[in-house]
Length: 394
Ligand code: ADP
Ligand code: MG
Image (cartoon, rainbow, N blue to C red; front, side):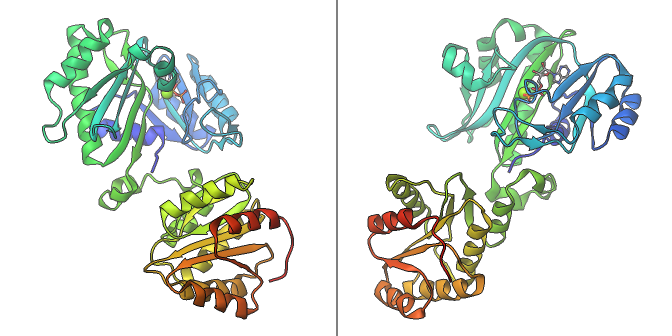
C-alpha cells in the first residue's frame, strides 16, 4: 500500500525525522486559513497524489506572498496531473499540502528498501537529490551509495558513518553528521516497526542553516503486514487505487489491471503468468492478471467474471484452470452458474486440465452455456485471440 506525502511526513514527525511545518487541505479557503496560521517567509503548495515527478508537472508551487497561496491552491485543486509516474491518464488532485519553504543548500537522495540479492534492508543514498534515482543510477552509477544493514544486528553508528563519508562534503560538517546519524536510525526504526517495503526521501535537504529536513516523502507498506498496523490502514486512500482491484480484494482475488483486451481467469500465480505469456505469443495482450487462488469456488469464479466484464476493454475471456486440489468439475459448475447469473455476451474459452478435467469439460459441453472448451493451452490461447471482439449470446 502507498500513502500520500503529507501522511509520510506525519509518520516521519512521529519518528523524529525533521519535516517542514505543514498541513493537508482540500479547499482553497482552508489553504488560505492555514497559510495565515503558518506565517512564514516562503510558502509551498504541493499536490497530493500517489505519484512522484509533481514538481516538473506543475504540482509544486513556491511563493513568498501569503496572499498568493489560495490562488495557487485553486489552480491545482481538481486538476489532473500527468507525471512520468501517473501514466497518460494522470491523477486528479483532491488534496494539497501547504507547508513552509526551506532554504536549500544541498539536495540529497535517501532511500531504504529490502535488497532481494542480500535479503537485507539496504540504504540507498546519493548527493544527486531531487533527481530520479533511476536516472542517477543509469548516468552516474558511482554516485549511488549503498549500505546494507544486517537485520539481526540492526542499524549502528558505523552504518551511518559509512554513508556519511561516502556522501562526503555536504554532510561532513559536525552538526549535519550528527543529524544524519539520528535521521538514519529513525528511518530504519520506522521501516522495521511499520513493515514498510520502501521509505524514500527525495530530496533530503541540508538547509542553509545546516539542518537536515525531509522535503518529500514516499512510504510503501507490505500489504501482508497491514493487519498489524491500524494506524497505517487509516492512511488508505481509495481514490488512488484501481476500483476493480479494490473489488477483487474483497473476494481475496489477486487482480492487477493491465492494458490488453483478453480477460484472464486463472488459478495460481505461476499459471497466470504463463497464460499472459501465451496470449502475447498468440498475438494479443492480457487485460489483467487474475489469480482466483487454489480454493476457487463458484462464488470466486462468479466474482472473477463480474470483475472482468466491468473492464470495458475486455473483448474475450480466457479461463485457464489446472485442477490440483481444485477439482475441474467444480470449476465447470462455477462457470456454468456464473455464466447464467452474469449473462456473458463475450466469447469465452475455458481450458481445463488436471483433476476431473474430462468430467468438467463434459459438464460444460452439456450445459448449453455458450463457452468454448479446450484442453491444450496453446490451442486455447489461439482460439480466444481469434474469437475476441465477436458478439455472442449467453
Ligand atoms: P516531486 O518529487 O513529486 O517532484 P518534491 O516534494 O520532491 O515533489 O518537490 C519538488 C521540488 O520542490 C524539490 O526537489 C524541492 O526543490 C522543492 N520543494 C519541495 N518542497 C519544498 C519546501 N518545503 N521548501 C522548499 N522547496 C521545496
Ligand atoms: Mg521528490
